[in-house]
Amino acid sequence: MTEQTHARPALFSRPAPILFFIVVAVLIDQAIKIAVDHYLPLQEAVPVVPMLALYRTYNLGVAFSMLSGMDGWFIVGMRLIIVAFVIWLWYRTAKDRWIAHLGYALIIAGAIGNLVDRFAYGHVIDYILFYTESWSFAVFNLADSFITIGAGCVILDELLLPKKAGR
Image: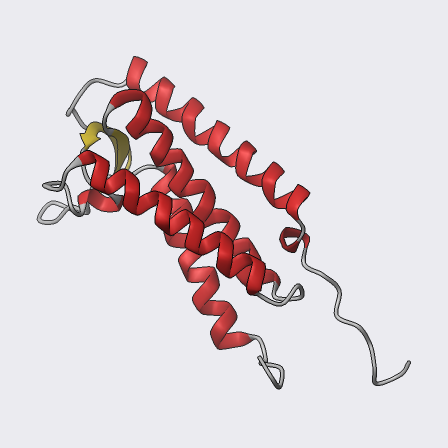
C-alpha cells in the first residue's frame, strides 16, 4: 500500500445523505412532539425511571429555555442564521472529517425541528426532565438533544482528528 492513500469522504459530507438524515431526524422529532402534545398531561411529571420523567411544557426560548424573554421572531431569525452558519461550516469542512459532518447534521436537524415547532405552534414542545429530590435540569426535547450531541461531535472532531497542513 502506498503512503499516498486518499481519505474517504464522510457519509454526511455529501448533500444527499445529510439531507436524508436531516429530514428523517426532523420527522422523528415532530412525530414524538405530536404524540407528547396529544397524550401527555401539561406540566405534570410522568415518571419513567428514577431521575427521568416525561413532563410536557412549552418553551418560548431556545434550547433549555434560554432567551425565553426574547421576541419570537428574533429567536426564529437567530435560528435561521445559525442553520446558515452551520451549513457554511459543513461546506467548508474537509470531506473526511466524519465526526464534524455528523455533528453538523445533528445541529441542523435539531434547529429545524425546533423551528418547525415555532412556526406551527408559536412555541417549542419540551418533554424530557432529568431530576433528583433536590435538583432538576431544564426540560428539553429530542431536537435539543440533537443540537447538544452535534456540538459535542464538532468539539470532539477538533480534539481527536489530526489536522492537515494548510487547513
